[in-house]
Length: 246
Image (cartoon, rainbow, N blue to C red; front, side):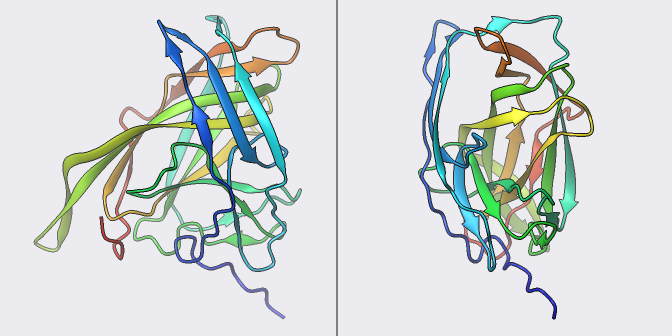
């Protein structure tokens, strides 16, 4: 008996939690207070459940960041993004998938959608998109786990202009910062933290990746200011969802 595949993410998404994020900035010293409703891994976001899903949103955790300590000698984090992704596989250990669904409107200002499903099964994260979804891997090249990591992407929405059978990017219609808190990133290239980007709007979306991140180190009394390296020399571009209006 074959197992049914979960429906396309934009068609039957159940949002079970709302994120509340406050990011105060005071004369260059950044203090973060994040109140999250997410999984017990410390990931902030909503939960999306497909048929047969085992994922639940079962924990509340507070993140508290003081002024970060600068660490010039730390190798930091590396982000690499892969486009045209059609499917994602739920990890065999039973953990969830994490995604950012970027719509043109709404009150969400950060965090992840948490996708739950049977271990080892596929989820059609980008099968319904003309150019697929985008997966980004965050690798910790330090010697120890990073705890309560926070980096802030910048999201830009542009008009989609139709003409001669093509869509081209137009003027900016909206832009905002989108903080992404990650509970833990293990060290080493074989164990990155992965998340997916989906454009659920009828607009072009540009995701500007950060150059720094805030994180805790096991045993450290203060958070660390980490460098974020990437091979991306321009924003990550996401094409419109063609059957959605801007």
